[in-house]
Image (cartoon, rainbow, N blue to C red):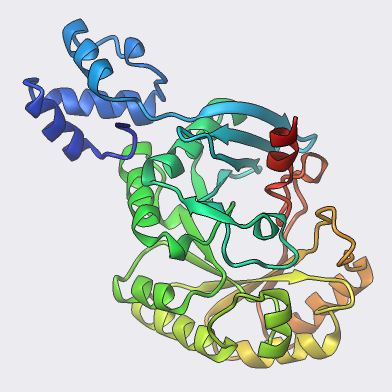
Length: 341
């Protein structure tokens, strides 16, 4: 039974049941989340007899690092093997002003975005809160001497289809690891009940919605498992903004010749008019399929300029980690390759 995924209060209660004083739970939490211990033997300020009892009954709960790939731009991608043998990828992204972790929330993904390598691999299971937090610890250990201070749930999987585990992971990252809640962002494919739940709970997580098209007919081609119409997604975002006071980011993956013309930019601007939002343009990254092509630099600039001229706040995501297949839409490939070895 893994201990990673329990907060300090839960660890205190657990150790009291083991006959240890409650303060030992705080020490245990420190070893798990701040010092990133891999074994009980490392926990030198816990009595030897207690460490032995813990080792006999529990596991620390850390995953096994299979491979670590380092990009020329500083990005690091980790392939992790979980206790049941399932494998996931997670990415560390160093920037001038922050060190971000892009964490997976599921093994595979049921949403099935056609441009995304993860979605093409199918869905296996949800991750536990401990398995999600473990990725942040692994990134910190492997990726940089800098402290991990930003997290986005945007790796493999749909976070809002694993709501309870993701929200507990966010609390653990905040309270135990030390990542400010305002620096944690959840990226969703547009799961309306989940967005509304975030709104009702007045969550202070950042919200990013993968939109990719301004109209239902095109969006269903790009996100074939999208259940809710665009209008319902936008209405849920209005409710989220009203109840939380936070801005929404809309992610828009530009697919060459599919959703990157000026008419679609105008439709997108009309759809988002009056909404406290920001559009993040993500040029398509090739994931080994000939189905789509990358947009031209000219079309990216024209699309961005059109949105800006129509009053929409817009940025273009930097392409990072492409040389190690760690860019947006590329996760899962190396898992398949490693598994076949």
